[in-house]
Amino acid sequence: MPQIPVLIPIIVTGLLVGSVMVNGGRRMSKKRLGIASVISGLLNGAQAYLVNYLMPQPTFRTGAATFPGAGTFTGAAGVRQTGELTFTISSILVGILIPLVILGIAMFRSRSKSSEEEVEPENSTLEK
Image (cartoon, rainbow, N blue to C red):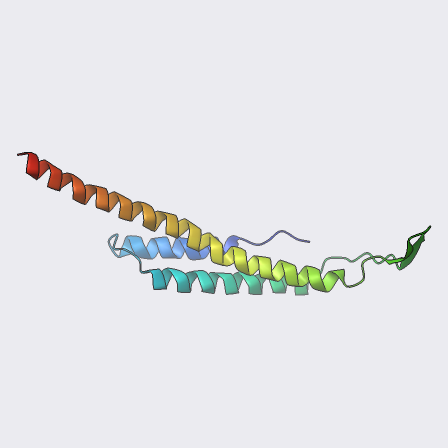
């Protein structure tokens, strides 16, 4: 199975970070982050499906092999279809999680820093 693509989620994350920087550092809404993550996941899933469709992985069918006392074993029957589905679903999940986790951590850190900055001036004015 090929590696899960991560290029599209990184590009989407970069576009989101760039849009936040252009807006003067204003906070990004959770709705916008969620929509961008879902779009990233769908695009990543589409890319994974197309990669698998245009350049399929070779399948090795061994036919029926007989082992003593074990009956009949069918080699790789049906592995290709479940492999494609698993690959596509995991690509969608990775595409959703990369921007969500990276920007979610950044939003959490920026909110914690801004709350710390708001608390410090209040304490300094009370002491004077």
